[in-house]
Length: 144
Image (cartoon, rainbow, N blue to C red):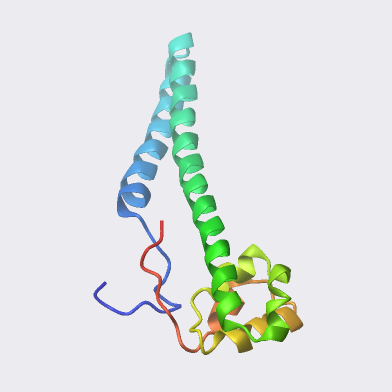
């Protein structure tokens, strides 16, 4: 990457998916609906259904990939926390929600114990708020 990853620029876009596949499927859905309205027939209805199916399949596939990624992050963070957290916090690893673990993954090892304690004690759940508390950002460039 040309510049270091931070909270402000860490959102991941997959150009082929976000800027080509989704727009093409969206245009196809709109075009299919227009054709169906103008020339109603069994074929035009099937065209709309297929356009919707393709668009929904693309979105569903992306969500499945992100779900697998979140499961891996959960596993990675639980293992990392076993190594980094003090003994009194290790017993509380099971209390973290997926959203909390996903947000905390950007914290450095030195910063993680303090943030983890704060997140649990204050019952912080919003990913964005947790990420904003991170002072020493550890980038993650291997994301889906």
